[in-house]
Image (cartoon, rainbow, N blue to C red; front, side):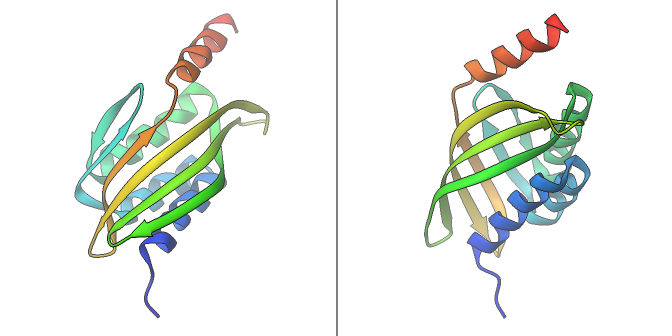
Length: 134
């Protein structure tokens, strides 16, 4: 059975739900060596190891997992478009932040070769403010 590009992306989202270690592992598996992951307000990564390191760094910020609510998903050829809501949780399972996100994910040979995510980076500023007040 062939795995679709949509299935690959949903597998990454499912790993995000499980935790940062699972997320890092899924990204290492799904990303091409030259994949560029761009997000508003966050440094871009190139390759699976940089992306995994970014996700693993979430735990230092107090985050343990990302809940993903996919509102809309569509694909055309080797491109998958998503509209979703990401919810970041701390180690105690407390909801820390909610981010509406639109993503454009490109695929090559069944792996993610480019990923651009668009969100309001003001949410990150709020998180930084929350972290500095604790």
